[in-house]
Amino acid sequence: MIREVVSLIWASVKNIYRNKYRFILTSILLQVFLMTVGRYGLATLFRLGIELSGETSLTKDNFLTILGQTGSFLILVSYMVLLAGFIYLEMICLVYMVTSSHRHYEFRDFVRAGWRQLLWLSGPQLLVFLVYVVLMIPIGNLGLSSTLLGNLQIPNFIIDELSKTGWGTILLYAFMAVILYLNLRYIYFLPLAVVNNDTPLHNMRQSWQLTKHHLMKLLLSVGLLTLVLTGLGVFIAFLLSLLFGFIDDFWDNLALQTLFYSLVRGLLYLITFLNKLVLIEVLVNHLLKYDEEHPDVQYVTLGESDAKPFRYPKWSKGILWVTVIVGVIFNGSRLYLIAANPNVLMIAHRGDVARGVENSIEALEGAAESGADLVEMDVVMTADNELVVIHDDDLGRLAGVDWQVTEKTLEELEDLEISQDRFTSKIVSFETYYKKAKELNQPLLIELKLYGTEPDNYVDIILEKLQSVGLRETDKVMSLDLDIMEKIEQKAPEIVTGYVIPLQFGDLSGFNTDFYVLEDTSYSDFTMWDAERRGKDIYVWTVNDEEIMANYLQSPVNGIITDELALFKTEQANLKSDDGYFARALRLLALQK
Image (cartoon, rainbow, N blue to C red; front, side, top):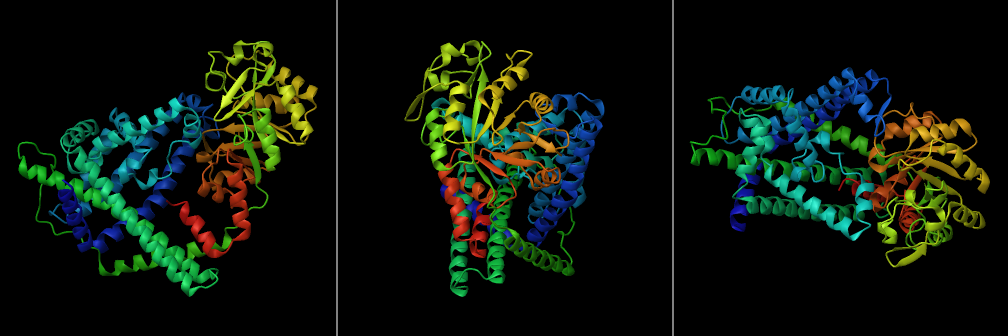
């Protein structure tokens, strides 16, 4: 089987090499079109849908409200149809390039096939497409993901929370295994949509049938191809680093390091594109071969014609040179402008969890010793309207008991033993925790956790508690509940208030708080610019990855909430000690893995 897989991949690579110019130019033109016209058109339509509902952005709080507005709902449905259209356009062009190198087809036949798919997606078949997109998000459909879906991913905080327990970790791995399996079974979905006249639902069924008997071969093909291309890319990048290190002794010549960065970025792009194209070659070859061997079961319904294969005119080579020149200039400007931000706050997520149980006194003390600028901690209201420092309402994870914090009194909860990793501690009241923070001179970022059982006068109780402990100017209060935070802002404007936003699209004009806390995947340069012009701070959570940490330490964000305080300090020290152009190039490249 391995020999057959290698032979199939090698044949596909040879065909791509014979048509390399046509394939590369098609890819570049598609990238430029999708990243400009595609993104601008989608963004404009999305903003229109939000504005029709009277909102300024889409969040978890107003999602259902926006969908409940007829005009907004229709616009957002149109948005999904347009997104589907762009994805199909990308696949139409790539599949056409591949199939036309084997058989002669009229390009208009592919366009008609794509148009039929788009018409189907204007109805109930849109749900089928949405299911397919959701399945693609975690692993990019094994390399066939669209350019427009490249930034979609499972939010990091969900993965982090699941990974904190044994069962959560098992559930996460099981989920990813199921997603991998489904991606394999539906890998023919987009190629089929281009080469036949069937509905998306029927194509999903056909893909399931096609992969029924050669699933292992597909898995080997995808795995071997990715392994070989990744290994080749790493090897070439290593040789380039040696070469430019020899030429540039100090690793800090802007022109040379711009060239190095551009060459490696181009290499990464070519490897990603080649991976996608070879996969399409393998899939299309199988479809064509299946049609020849089983004339009674037609998967490819486009008829072969006498049309000559499409060829770009000779002057189109200029597009490649223009793209290269613009890309090099852009890369040089990035290397020159990116720099370390010395003012980013180190915010300990639930204290220093490397020294104690989350939200414990020990974790607070550890964070203070580590030099945290702020310690993020969670407070939950008990059944007797007191406050305890804990994140979950369910005590099963930390205390191992089937209790709900909101159903117990402070007396029942205080001093209850909790454990995490190798640490043990006890639940403490907010008053006790705050007193210790004052002794340590440690500013706090207090998150109010609401679980739906809070009394009507919740805000008044919170303000009374904050006043009783003597809230300092250096402390800040935040919550996922915007309504609660805006009431606190209105009643006590002297308190620094923040809104925690796990999902956000649009601008920040609808949020009347002093700062915003964005989940990592919701952060964007536009959002940062929008906050800056409003005079607001932005903190990002939860950042525990080395490359992402380094990226935020070179961005305008005001604070980073992290479990990894040692990593924050290490990356910050690295940026201070080596901020040369080669080091900047390596950090930027790490983010594109």
